Image (tube, rainbow, N blue to C red; front, top):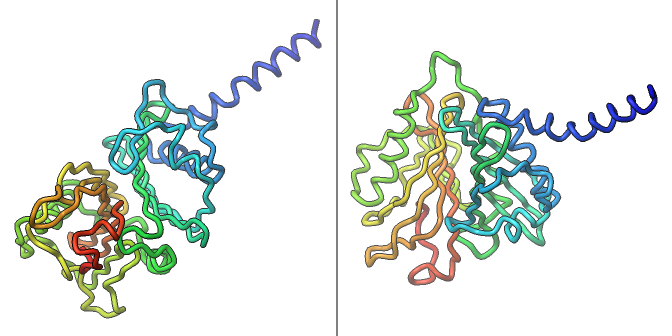
Length: 282
C-alpha cells in the first residue's frame, strides 16, 4: 500500500511540474522574463510545443494574423543577442533578437502579452537578407556596444514622457515638425544595419528623416525602468508621398527626457521600395 501511495504521489508530482513552471509566468517583471525565456528556448529549437499558449490566443507575423503552427517560431535559430523590455502596466514584453547565421540571418522584434500563467499574444516582425537595409552583423556590432541598462529610480522618465517622445519622432515623418522631437546628443540610430553614429559627442538621430509619410497603427510597449519604448506600426500607407504600409518597429531609449538610441526594423523587401534605391535612414 505504501509503495503504491508513493508511486501515485510521484506521478502526480511529475504531472504537476509543467504547471508549476508555467505558473511562474505573470504580469510581474520576473514573470514576463520567464515568458520571454520560454519564447527564446522555443525559437532556438524551432518548436512551440513547450509554450504555454492560452486557448484562443492570438499570433501576428509582420502585422498580419497568422497560424502560429506555420510561423517563424518554427524556424530553429542560433541567437547571438537579445534585449527585452517589460511593460507591467499592460503585461507585455518586447524582445529584440539578432541572428547572424550566414545561411539564415535574422533580426526580429517579438511582443508577448501574458495573461496570468499563460501567453495570450505573440507578435513578431522579422527582417532578413534582401530586406530594408538589412545587415545582421552590423546590427549586432552596434547593438552590443550600447547601454540599455536600468536607469536609477530618481532619474527615470515617466511613461507619458516616453510615449510622447516616440510619438513626436514618428509624427515628424508626416508633419516635418522636427523641433518638437526631444533630440539628445549623442544619439545613435541603427536601422536594419545602417548606423548614423560616428562615436562623437554630437552624433545625432536627426538625420534623413523624410516628410509626408504617415506612421500609422501605433501600438506601444513601455519600460520606465530602462527608459525604453517600442512602437509597432505601419510605415506609411503607400501614398504618393512615400511610405509602404510595411510592418515596422521603432525602439527608443531616452535618458533625461532626450533620445539616446533608436533602433528600427522594417519588413520591406529592398527591391519593393519605390525607385529600387536605398533611401536615407529613417
